[in-house]
Length: 381
Image (cartoon, rainbow, N blue to C red):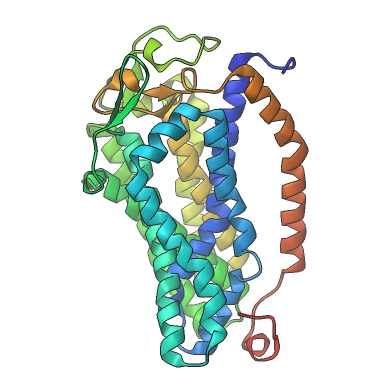
């Protein structure tokens, strides 16, 4: 694409990948949070149907961000896609198995009036919300820690990890942070979308706990990164215009390596500040009964936490903890300049359409779900 050189195209797609991941967290993230909260905020069938129908009109469309994120990794960062999707295959299978429960749960729950039947599907929705939230966080923790892979001289990837090996104290902190972050987001959404009453009050109570947990776990993760054996740095010269060849880069693991960017680019501190400040705003909104402030804060917190990961790691995309020289970066793992240029053009054309349609859909579906709606609306789940 003549408008941008190779370096700029790589930076554009690094930023767009972050935008897609944040978009997924902000939209499908509250869907996951709502599903994980379902057994705890709603006890009667009417209450649970109210909660389910807060996301009923939009949950399918929200999954588009997940698909776009996977597609962007495949097209823009093929090395990253090949290593992560094959190496983390069992974890991906676990996530997809849990996600499959969501559409089935939504569609089949109300097919029969039997209470036991509906309760089983409610727990299926709970699993479909909690498990992906936990595993996504654990996966991000493993990316920060470095994935157990290596490349040979022919750039063939060899993954030397196990499913249980993905769960370490640091990655569990990341997983629990992901769960707390999405529970906060989901509770803020429920409080915003359901009528005031028992469900609304329980969502606020759980949201308070989730908000406090988000702050404490984010701080704990920051301490791990600062003082634990977490972090990498590039030791070879960097050529932002060079060919995509991971074997041309040498890297090393270094304690506190993920904090280097904050001294080089002080403006990046905006991301962690947003993560903490957003959670505080969400707590303020929840306690004051200001649902708009609560949801705005939970959204800002999720965006800040995810942006903190990307900005801290730059230019790394997927470091290797068993062979740091095999680490994949923005500069050595991208598609060709021609491919990235075409993708930028397609994104410029179609992303505004997706955003416009999404905004229109949310406008049409705006409003609170009430118990009266559950009894009278034949289109409700």
